Image 1 (tube, rainbow, N blue to C red):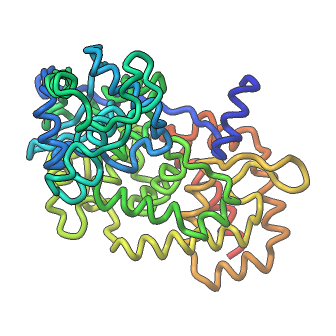
Image 2: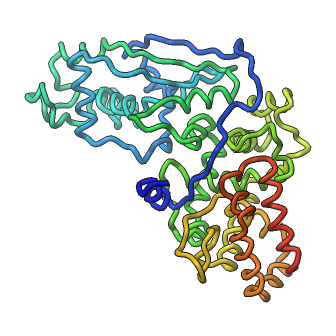
Image 3: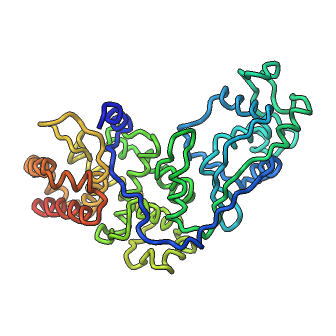
Length: 405
C-alpha cells in the first residue's frame, strides 16, 4: 500500500477490503436486455416533470456540481456539443433510475425547467431556473436564465437529442450491478453501495439514511466514518444483513455484493412481501424464506442502537478497529469487526453483557491477543468475505464471548 492509498483509507475512516466481484454462477445471456435509445430533449423534460426519471437525491450527493460547471454544460448545449452517454435502469412501470448522468440531468432540469416549477408545477415559473455564469464563448449571456435567451438558442437547447443506454427489467440483478460497476462517472468508478443505493431505492435506503445519522453510531465509530462513496451506509447494511440472516447461511455461491443487495431487496419487500424482485428471488431459489429473520423496521433500529451502545461501552475509542491502547495508533474501522461485534453483542442478554463488563480487562486482554493472531488477521482482512473465513471469524469471537458469559 502506498502513501496515497493509506491516506485515502484513513480519510474515509474505513479500512479497505478485498472483494470478490466476479459473478458467482452462470447467467442466461438471453435474459439480458439492454437498449440504446436516442431520447429527444422534450422527452427528457417530460419525464423530469412527471418524475419518471428518478434523480435520487442521495445518490452521489457528495459530487454536486458548482454553478460554473452547470453553466458550462448548458453552454455545450448552446454550442451543439454532444454530451456523453446516459445510463439508466428501467423498472416494470417504465420509470428510469439514473446511474450515470445524474448531475447532467439535474443541471438540465434546473436550468430549462427550474426548481420552483418542478416543485409547484406553476407554468408561470417554467424556464425560471438558475442564471448562467462564467461562460467561455457566449459571455454576453452571463446572468441569463433560460427564458431570457434568444429564441434560436432556446430552440437549439430544446432540439438536443441525447444518447441513453437503458437496462430493461428482467436483466438479472447481479448482471445489472456488474454492468454498472464498469461505468465511470466523471472518471470515478461507482462504489458498490452507490450502485445499490441507486437500484434499490425504498424502505432500505430510508433505513440506512436514518441509522447513519444515529448518535450511537457516530459515538461508536468516533464520528470518523465519512459519507464518502456511502461507506457508512455499507457498514450499517452489513450489520442488517447478518442480523436478518445467520452468518452460517453465507455460502460459497454468495459474494458480499449479492448478499448485501439481497438484504436491500428483503427490506424493500416489507411489510407484505409483495415486492416483485423479492418474490422472483424466492421462486428461483436465490432466497430461502426459512433462513430469513423477518423483523419490523423499528426493531432493526432498536437492535442497531443497542449494538452501537454496547460496542462503545466495551471497546471505547478502539471500537471496531484492529488497534488497541497498548500497541498501535488508532486504526480505521474494520468492516468485519463492525459486523461481528454488532451482531454478537446483541445476541446476548443484558445480564450476560454486564458479566463481560465486570471482567472487561481480562476479556480485552484475550481479545487483543486474538487481534495479533496472523490467521485471525487474514479472516478479518484479506480473506474476510470468503465462505470459510466468515464462519471462522464469527466462530472465534463467539468462542471468546462464551468464556465470559
